[in-house]
Length: 69
Image 1 (cartoon, helix red, strand yellow):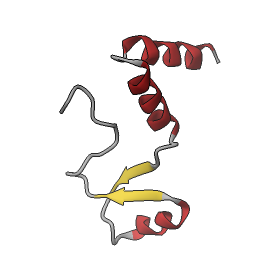
Image 2: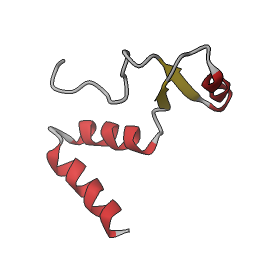
Image 3: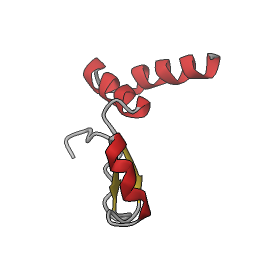
């Protein structure tokens, strides 16, 4: 419980602004969706029925874009 509180406060203090901190916390908690690496047509594609995206290994889109990138 303490570790979770430390991580949340750390994210808030390290973000450039509160909006970025909230977006990152939403991504960490899975609110923005869950993406796992794998082949979209493979065995893991059944997870898409539960809202989990399966993407290729070379297309990492796990975190929101920060710092104007």
